[in-house]
Image 1 (spheres, rainbow, N blue to C red):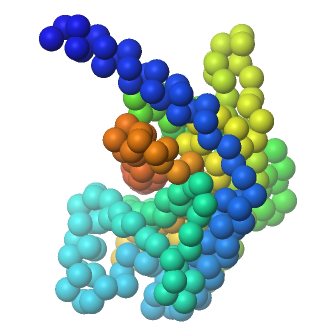
Image 2 (tube, rainbow, N blue to C red):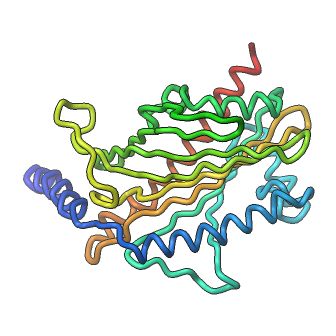
Length: 276
């Protein structure tokens, strides 16, 4: 039995190592993600410009909305997997996977301005969203637009570190609501992160666990607090043939776990501010 455990402990990292070095981001994958993004963003814009559909979490019937709102007020996170389609047709992504999730929280005694200010304080995101974000820095800032650098850490059996550059844009939608879009423009996997041998791999090379990541935030001040909603689009490698049992759970679980962790951290930070 001990020998079997030892063999598994060796075989799993070796299998991961083989798969990690086999992924490469190609033009058809990027084009499919861009197409998916355009459709998803069009859907988002249609929702946030409709006064009664601003929050995705409350699109259900009255009973479902009441049930969800009670859960949010208990401090829970409502999370749902989404799938954009092109007039009902599935969007194929050659050699890649798109992970599309949306999550919502409610924080009492917090204003819209306070909630937006926390998200805009990108220099502090490494502290706020630790351990998923290891470094954060605003590179440029002009009004409601930011250019920022973030380093993400992902750990699921193996550890993966990626450096990203993103553009963030905030859009006021009324006295009680605002939205933002944070779109990645560069993603590089980091080899030997945190050591003297650290180096960035070429864009599109490496394990392929995060090739692109866009997040779309919605803030609505209501009922003595603020609802915060985050919709995340992540592009990753596809599942290598024969390694679905090993790679599949990792590739599919990382985006949801990162979104859940980000919303938990946001709620905690805003709740602490409300106590001051």
